[in-house]
Image (cartoon, rainbow, N blue to C red):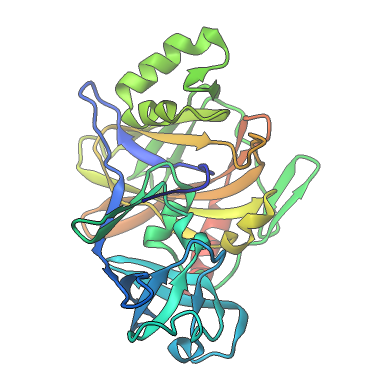
Length: 358
């Protein structure tokens, strides 16, 4: 059985850009499952708000549901829980609370809830191995909701993002648009400094650039950056691809790690409303010289439309035990496929971090 997710919203996956390709593996979680007696539902062991629970897959349910006794809440919508499966967790997963006794009347096991399509649909693949009795979740580097794997930084102060006639502001501060092809980000004192180069935006369709003049460029990207090859292999009806090249300027030659946190600030897609304001952490990536950050938007509907969205991308460097916020960008993807980049001023960034620590 294979359940496919909705198309990608954003990818900010980091890959080494070197002559020998570095293949970043999909993030994979493999868990055992068993069948409920009588009804033969597929069950997974997990936890909700720290309490063990058996959860059943239900592709007929649009939303994840939990029994009232599992969460200690009254029936209804709008509840959020800490959901854990294996080593992955979702700190604010939306659920409906309702009596599910009738759903499981034919089984003797105490099933605490249903994993609905909202949960299943966030993955690029969910594969059941009937012989082994295992289910494998594949959260590809391309899948926006794969950020939920390390979700979420619990920001105590929510972001206020405003749009007005092509101008954007964050927490009341106007954001300057980056018009140059590159920019430097540094920690005050410039002990740590990163140079970011914005490469060309290329529209693709069916695994090929729409503009034939971009064929050579895209071929080079796909040979050097495995994620680009993977995106093209999916042959989306329409997609917008833009690599960013991160170069470590200082301290040169040291074995650091780079990490990004991404916040969805705004989306023209109403179905994204539940994830606006959540912060999703990417895994740390070795950073000693140059890496590539792939921005990609794919279609989100059968009409093959690209939807306007705005993300805050926080960029960190880890030097041994020290984790430093180097800078942040607001990335706006347009329905045309173009990307716009805005710099978050350092004073605003510092204030955001101060508010978070209060």
